[in-house]
Image (cartoon, one colour):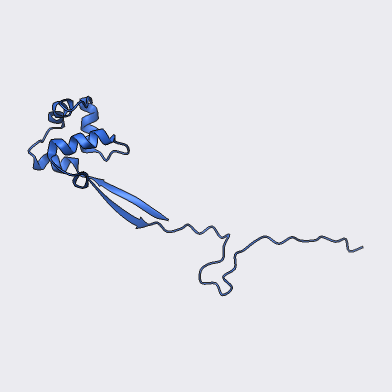
Length: 109
């Protein structure tokens, strides 16, 4: 399984542009038709968002004259597969999977 992770660089871009306060971003977004509250803009700039509108990302790229790759960087990592004990280990000689066997119960008498 491959795990996709990302880093959000908005606060760094803001600092490079001399914007130290997230509330300074509110009117810049409003000029582009994005009306977010000060709290929403604070979260957008100081926390890693789980969901963000592409229109907002486009507005941020326009405000800071940057590309989406400047705002977001992605990394791909292999996530180890959890072993459940239902399959043979990779190092086993047979390489077969474990499966239940049907048992026939007989009466000795």
